[in-house]
Image (tube, rainbow, N blue to C red):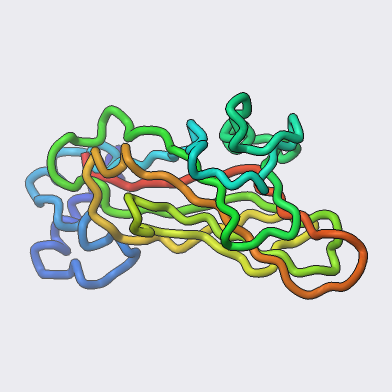
Length: 221
């Protein structure tokens, strides 16, 4: 506890000398602009929060039928299928998949709402980061890419992408993006999953599997 108090006091001193431009990480300026008075009387975790948002609903009207549930073999936009449950269960053996995916074939998912301690006023969220787990199967001679975009309305806020997904499976994490978001903005975020296919020859389709999606937010309390 004493160590955190020393750290936040040091951060306040940096603010006083105009050091917010150091850019230690993309959200540094916003964090260091918290007032010195608040920092010196509270611990770091009292002032700054992080949370992980995961898919919590299918956007059925926007889910292309080439994306399929590994559990049922049914297209994700079928009324009886809830593909989002395959992306938030921390199980690499449950996933959505697409054979020879293309960017026009989208799967879209709503995300958890903002945690209760995200302030309702202003723009308390200062940064976001997208991460997902993916794997290539089927005709592994082909090259398969994957992208997960975090969107607010029609605007892309952040993304994570790899143009050559491994057949051993991998975690793809995008850059931390500094962006001011309100609590309402966070509640309206959603993710869009797309893929690409290229190269290879005969031997059947390449298959993109996506088994997990998460969005980390950092915010000022």
